[in-house]
Length: 186
Image (tube, rainbow, N blue to C red):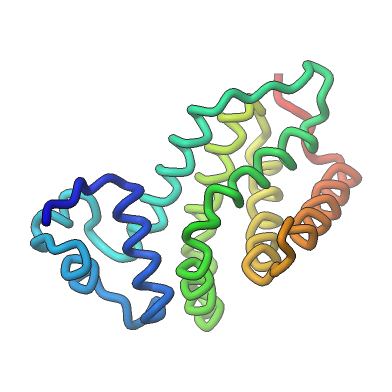
């Protein structure tokens, strides 16, 4: 059996294994067995299991960049961000169980969330770029930290329409606006 190893295939199988085994027990060798490929072939796409976060970010960035985004020129930044973040969660849904295992592992270590912040900042920057939003670095950091809390809500939200996640996102964006964030750079 030959598998066309696209990012999507790699992510699907990797996060399925992570959901089954847990983040700590998951090894790249498990992924090689699942995909019936040699480790050298996998290393062309992924050098470490931590690299899955970057692969996922790249996949989300590509998918979001292919979508047409149409907002009125007067649409507030918060409206654009709401739509973009919820679309991002829709795209992450196939990997949710595995991401939950990863989040569990990260929450058990003091330093792990700090390591993940850099990838989250890059992810938020990619999102803003795809939405045509230019924010200052401090605004992107505020949004990144808020997004980190929001991911926790999303991971536990069992409502079919993600209403708890949407409500939390509304609250976060309102709070950030009230604190004078989201003044787009010229």
